[in-house]
Amino acid sequence: MSFLYNQNIIKNFFYLYATLFMLFLIYFFSNIDALGTVVSIMSFAVLLISWLFASRLFKMIGAAFISTGVILSFTAGDSFQTIISNTTSNLPLLFFFSILPWIGTVVKVGGLDESITEMVQDEQNRVEKIYGRSLFTTYFLGVFLNLSAIYIIQQVLSELFKKATVTLRQEFIIKSTLRAFSLAVIWSPLEVIVGLTVDSTGLSYFTLLPWLILCSVVTCLSEIYISRKEFKNVEFDAPFKNVNKKELKHSIIKMLVLLVSFMTLVMTLNSFSNLGFIMTVALIIIPFSFVTAIIMQKFELFVKGGWTAWRNHNNTLQNFAVLFLSLGIFSEGFNVSPLPGLMQQVFGYIDSYVVLILILIMLVIYALAMFGVHPIATLAILFEVLGPVMNSENMLSIAIVMIVCGLSIAPAAPYGLNATMTSQYLRINPYKITKINIGFAFRMGFIAIAIAMIPTLF
Image (cartoon, rainbow, N blue to C red; front, side):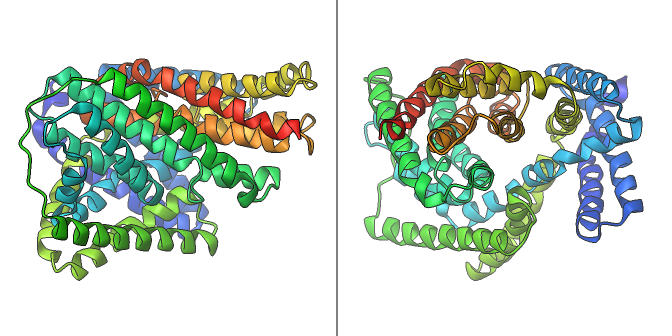
């Protein structure tokens, strides 16, 4: 098995993923059946090859997902060909993650990463102050850039905390970026879970908006209060860069223009197409980054830095390929199994008690997330299961809890995109992230339940 350590193979792994993504994009837009078969076979082959080069943890995860998914699928009568094709269900997520370095590079060459550093730094290096500023900055960027914000902020904070202890650096980055991201996206119209809930319940987005913002604000205030006590008197060694307020103001305006432009493009394309949210963002990232680099007159620097960052990033994509492609087999197998029907029976026992329904929704979302089931898949199942239970009196409450809990578990779900992306970046076990953030997830979930009960009182 010495070939697993061959550096020439590892340095050229990006060719394998690039080929898969190009074939997938051609099939996505052409919908040619024969090409779809080729993409399915190659996706399955990429899963097996990536599994050989993945870390031990992700090999175990992949093996568990594949074996469980195959058993569930065969039990439901699916063919082996169908199981192979299930690996493609998460290709948009894998493609999206593979191109994140491009938008990170345009932020870096445009000097915006320095502006972010200036926004979060503190002259006395007081961690409690930096935490609040990092939370706000990630929140601000998360509303516009979605998952790309996590990638950008984590790079900035790693540089700022490079002289701090490993424990402090990891804990700070995990809390300030992943938690802030969840707080930001629960009310964002760009978030797919928000859109899925609006479509499935028939409620207006603007009916949900004030309740979602209230959940976000209350949880954010509680997080700032708790963090101030936790990080009080904690300091570290980092150089302080004197801030030129005029230049910082110019950079913030430039950042606002960049973010609003990106969000406008996403919203426009998402409104006039049926691409799906993840594919919409993924397809916009590269052309948007290139055009932005041209406008900033940094094109050559951007292309050189972007190519290097993208190549290096994709050469280490094996863990994510194993996670997302095997998760597709498991999720699709779960959906066709008898398990959703059993869940419907459980909800039927408590249909007269709204608060119990809300608590059970939270527990189901959180429990399945621990086993790698994406909240989007869980919500799709719950909407089917809760059909007989939902009515005009509890619809709004159920929708609030579904959205908030579906996104509050993201910082703690060990196999979710946010946590796996962070574990890969920090080179730590994803269960360490779960341990750090699971308390936050439950706190945010119970705040949502308390707020969701208010509409039932009137």
